[in-house]
Structures are given as C-alpha cells and as structure tokens.
Image (cartoon, each protein chain N blue to C red):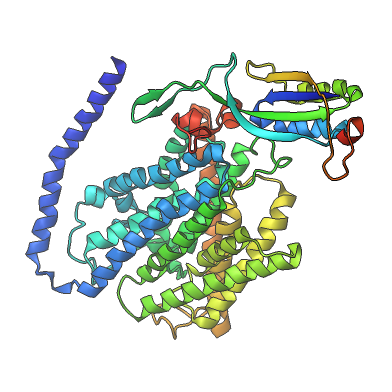
Amino acid sequence: MKYIIAIVQPDRMDEVLERLTDKNINLVTVTSVMGRGRQGGIAQVYRSHKEAGNLLKKTKLEIAVNDDFVKPTIEAITGGARTGEVGDGKIFVLDLAECIRIRTGETGGEAIG
Amino acid sequence: MKRIGWIAGLMGTGMAWAGVLPALAEDAASQATASAVSAVNTGDTAWVLVSTALVMLMTIPGLALFYGGLVRKKNVLSVLMQCFFLMCAVSLQWVIFGYSLSFGPDVKGLLGNLDWAFLKNVGLEPNADYAGTIPHQAFMIFQMMFAVITPGLIIGAFAERMKFSAFVVFMLLWSTIVYDPVCHWVWGVGGFVRKMGALDFAGGTVVHINAGVAALVAALVLGRRLGHPHKLSPPHNLPFAVMGAALLWFGWYGFNAGSALGANGLAANAFVVTHVASAVAGLSWALMDMAFNRRMTVLGLISGAVAGLVAITPAAGFVNLGGAIGIGLGAGVICYLFVSFVKEKLGYDDALDAFGVHCVGGIWGALATGLWATTAVNSAGANGLFYGNPAQFIIQVKAVAITVVYSGVVSFVLLKLVDRLIGLRATEQSERIGLDLTDHRETGYTMLD
C-alpha cells in the first residue's frame, strides 16, 4: 500500500480528478495549501508597500492506493496537471503502514478501495 | 523619470482645469441670484437628492457585492474594483461632457450639443424642460448615477476574464458613444425615441436593455472563461450576493420613485409598484426553482427579485398594482426560463447573467409597459394594450428594437476596436491565477494569517 501526495496548480485540479475517475480511482482528499518551489510568486502591493510574493496557492491531493494502482494514479496526476511551465507541482509516494475502514473495521488493502 | 514626467503632466492638466473652474462656478452662482429661487420646491429637491444617494448605493456597494459574491474568490477584487472605478470615472465624464451630450440642447434628435459641457448653463435654477421644481444640478447628479450604473451592469457578462486596461478604455468609449446618445434619444428634449411617444419611466431601455445587449455582445466577443461550460464556477460568497441584491432593492426606490423627480403621488405609485413587482418576481423565480429542482434556492430568490426590479423600471410611473403583479410574475418566469434553459442551449458564457436578467427582464418590462400602462396612474403617460390602446405596444416594440440594434452594433464595434488596440482578454495565465493578483497585485482573502 502506498500513500500518494501530490501538489498541483489549483486550476488543474478538475482535470486531475477527472483522469483519476477515468482510472477508477475515486477516493481522494483535497486541500488548498500555500507553498513555494522554484516558481516565483507575484508581489502584492498595498498602498505602495510591496509584499514579496513568497507563497503561492496550490492544491494538495492525498490518495491511499494498493500497489497495482500506484502507476495509474501517477499517470492520471501527471497527465492532468502538466502544463510544461515551472510550478506544475510534485508527486510524493510514501509507504503506507496500515489502513482501517472505520465503519466495518476492515484493514489493509481491503479497506483502501 | 518617465513616470515622474507622467505624473507632472497629469498635475499640470489638473491645474489648467482648475483655472477654468472658478469662472464656471461664478456662472452658476450668478444664475442662482439673478432670478429668485422661487420655483424650487424644497420637498421635491430633498427627495431627488436622497434618491440620488440611493441610486449611488446601487452601484457601490450594491451591484459590486452582488457581482463580487458570484465570482470566484480569486476575482472578487477585480469586480469590486470595476464597479468602484466606474463610479469615479463616469462621474467625471458626466460633468465634463456626458451630461451635455445626453441632455444638452438637441442636435437633430440624435445627441445633445456641448453647450452644457463642464456644467456650463447647468445652474441652481430649475430647468423646466426636465424638472421644474428642483435645481438643475440636482437633476444632473441624479442622472449621473444612472450613467454610472449602466456600464456597471455589463461587468456581469465579462467578469473573470477581461483585462483591466481594456475595461477602462471600453467603458469610457461605451459611456460616451452608446449610453449618452441612447439616453438623449429616450429622455432628452428633442430625442427621437421620446418624440415617438415611447414610455420609459426610469430606464428600461436606456439602462437595462442597453447594458444587457452590450453584455451579450461582450460575452460573445470575449469568449467563454477557461474551462466553461465543462467546469462550474460556483459563487464564492453567496452572503455577499444576498447583501448586494438587498442593497440593489433598497436603492431601486431612488431609481424608480426618484424618477418622478418630485415628492408626490407619482413617486408613491412608483415606490409601491416597484416593491410589489420585485416581491412577486422573487417568489415566482423561487417557485420555478421548486418546480424544476424541487428546492427553492437563495440565488434563485434574489435573482428573481432583481429581475422584477429590472422589469418594473420602465413601467413604474405608468402602471397600477395589477400591472406590478403581472410584470413581476412575468419577470420571474421568463428570466428563469431564459437563464436556466435558453442560455445553456446557446452556449455563450454570460458569467453572471447580465443579459439574461437585465436585457431579457428589461425587454419584458418595456413591452409590458405597453400592455399595462394607464393614464389613470399618470396623465402624462399613455394607455397600453389592456386599456384599449394597442398602438402603444407597437411603439414600445420599436423603442426596444432601436436600442437593441444600436447598442448591439456599436458595442460590437467598440469591443473589436479595443481588442485591436490593446487586447480585451486577460492572458490565460492571469485568468488561471485570478485577476485580483495579476491586474491589481492584491488578494481579497488571505489563506494564512
């Protein structure tokens, strides 16, 4: 079991979700986050006072999958989120120690899907 | 250095104007003392000045919040900015030449001349042609608020994707080349639509149809927002929209009842029918929602109320309670069907339904005025179809057609012109990031403290 975390451009989220659905990956958690990578931010100006734009809005997706779903998940995310510009985001794949479905008490691979 | 030169130039121009202004002010003052201020009625003047303030409130913050709440949060400031900017820019345009073009001495029924530019000859004495019991300047500033809100209504169509610089240029051109002439035709002494006998009490053709058609054209010329219609862009703050709609309703008493230009029975009639039509239209839209979606929605109820206000606008000084109920009912049902079904079929992206509510509601109201108008309410008006005068309905149809064609064609030309000069549409990247940050370097909301 793997835990996949992806940081993508906010406006690419719908495309990513659609592609995940196409590959039958329906369980996903999404949050709005701020962060910085190589992409420069846009400086804001308030009454002529400039605020350096360090942090940019991004969208974070978290998906727990069984091993055979790792590749399709990554394909769906890269396919949906890639524009070729700096700032398209990153995907992190972590080992997942355990997963429990609260309603039934199922554990492991059964509980994920 | 270049920037400093620019600022110095601006200040220089400002000072040059300032040199002209004392002379103009003297002019007005001498007029006021010359003939004793006998004709001015204090009650009428008080009501028109209060109405002016009420109509001002419709644009900012009424319309600004209504539209601002309906866009995505990355564009909220851009919409508030556009509304506030129009208040500043069109106000200045109006006193410099806009008022003169609209209401100044007639040239062939088409336009006012520039005799009243810089409010020359617009003093504190009444002008009997327009309003015999209030200072001419009170009439001028009341009309100014209409000139401000009309281009503001168009914002709903191109929200979230028009470049701010293009917005500024387009709006100044539109105010001058579309609003001012149409205003003159319908309301100016000598205007040819007015001479046809068309009834437009408070701006159904001049304000709502005029802006609504321009809105449709703008939506078509600019094209859809990225991802539309595939991706829904839900309103980011409906409570804002509710506040905005409520302020619009409140301000509309000034818009319609103020258009009686006096504190009198006609104003009371306009006040009552305006209120009733809005109430009925809100309910009828909500019932349509109920019929088609099994729930009444907040956005539906407030959209209906606004549609009712739009529709009663041309009729407010000519119809009675029965007319108000009929017009309100029609507005809720027709605008609902248009926005929910027809718009989807046609596939254009009128982001906030400026066309669907203002033009469709405005046309309904203008035609309905030709049905329900009665001289029992206003002897200076005319009877409509239901009171035995079908000719009035035909006149109304003509007035609508003239406005639709003129505003449609000229708005199209102006948009294409601005597009050629500086480009209308924000870059794809700006649209993705949001106009608040890319056009104004600000954000409406912070995500972190």
